[in-house]
Image (cartoon, rainbow, N blue to C red; front, side, top):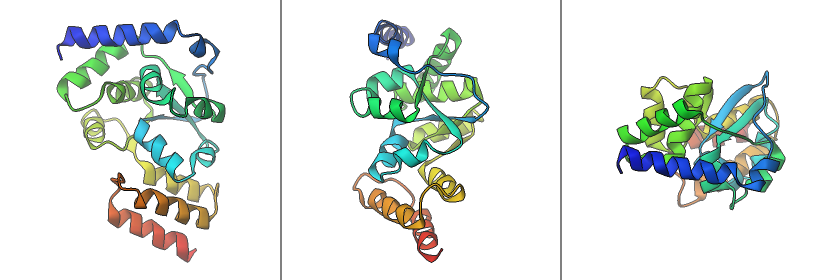
Length: 197
């Protein structure tokens, strides 16, 4: 896709978001002393799969996603639940959109919503939560700190948000799903740890 085509796609997508009354009622990104995590869709889906969503939003972080990602991938899935839990929707300025398009042009296999998530993390100096390998590779290249689902589970354990049994059962459900892409070695390390404590 040409750069101008990508720009037009972004422009019309964000214009629809700006004119959507739903977004007028949605919580806006706010200033916070908490560290910010920008999530891709795959991490949020895995957290839901393991029944960790509610617990995750009790961690001492602020969770955000770019507006384009929310509109395209979350709003009609479980968007209202995520907003109720505390998810914030953030918008990129024009420089941020150009940066997102730059990432997309550099790595065509990167989805546009993921490109927006990376650009938002870069602009806000935030931590990126990413399950997609291409997205993680680009984050590393751009010196954006990133983590994945297992890191989130480690924080749930560290902050004693859920029990070891819940961590074990939830991770087991995630690992048993046919679309699970988590490293088996790291899964087994945690499953063993969650059963021995």
